[in-house]
Length: 421
Ligand SMILES: NC(=O)c1ccc[n+]([C@@H]2O[C@H](COP(=O)([O-])OP(=O)(O)OC[C@H]3O[C@@H](n4cnc5c(N)ncnc54)[C@H](O)[C@@H]3O)[C@@H](O)[C@H]2O)c1
Image 1 (cartoon, rainbow, N blue to C red):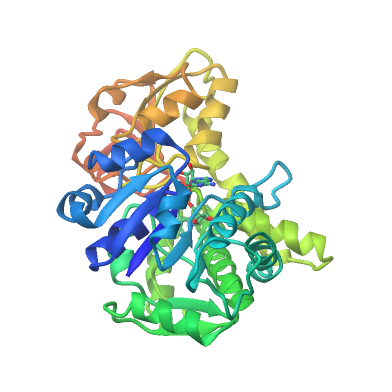
Image 2: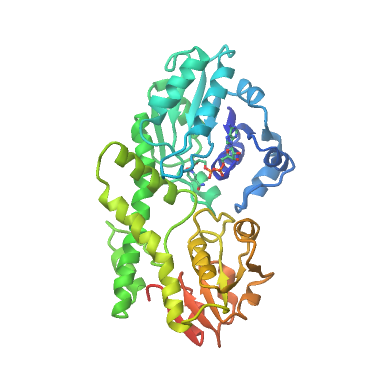
């Protein structure tokens, strides 16, 4: 099939590259000329393992452009993968979704054949039906269901392992209002072997929010348990193992630490809360999930001050800036509030991350960025904030280490304390 993917961020580019790998012909569209140029040169604008190789080996089936019209006109299906960030009040900002929908609709007005539009961006329940559908019909002059197809196909990939996640998903959810749209999406994914769940448009949207909020809640829950465990020196990771062996619970997402970040959980939790507020429904559990996560990184500072009561003038080393390992994404990284607190206390911050230093530098130009992780070790104390594999190779003997991510290798430090252990 010929596919257009609009928005070449983490989701759009991975979607486009993987569909090309599966044998489809893909045109990626972005308003960012630099991204488009890089993709056409075979360079990925984001760090995601395996992505550059897919671009290189499927060159003849994937290209990028800033021209929405030529891309959509030549394709059978258009995926909307633009960002849905938070507004200042936490509510979802749909401006890119609306703008893209109108752009597509105006192109579809001239198209003589049926075309399927798929919303892959994360949008609140009701958005595809009540915002995308009317805009598509209004600006194309066509009828969704007969002239056009419309589906909502949420993406569940995890940054860092996005390619294997896309190619071996646990499930594919197709929210659709008509059989032709469902059949077209099923055909597109037919080489993947996993359950396919067909739902209403709004149920597909809700599955995505409920999944992300549940996972964020699972982490906040184990962090709360970890904070309790610490008082009695109970090994919270043993507790997680014991809980995780129960198949109803499962071990993943039970690693206590300094909390969750990234481009999805924080904004999706905020959007769900803002929506609940708007429709006057209580969302107590989700609210607590967010509260625990806001407090958790600052516990690392509290522990650090037990060992170094006056941070003013001290050099604090930070190992890890990305919100999790194997990505360069720093959006809502738990390191951000930690660095803010250290700077407020008058500490000097030395930092290292294998991938995320260029973007962190834009936020905090005043830090000292080290060329190697080893250089960070010559600090008055070291905070471990992202669990990169290379931090396991360091020799922490003689150092003071406050660990936010449970790095076993750091336990031989002269002084060692963990956030929940
Ligand atoms: N990042 C993830 O791990 C992840 C996982 C699942 C779902 N999602 C969801 O997928 C969506 C995209 O997320 P992302 O992280 O890829 O976003 P992103 O911000 O990395 O990328 C969005 C891209 O869209 C482009 N864009 C904006 N308006 C455009 C327009 N009118 N035409 C063409 N391009 C346009 C931007 O330039 C940018 O390159 C969001 O709704 C997000 O919640 C993200």
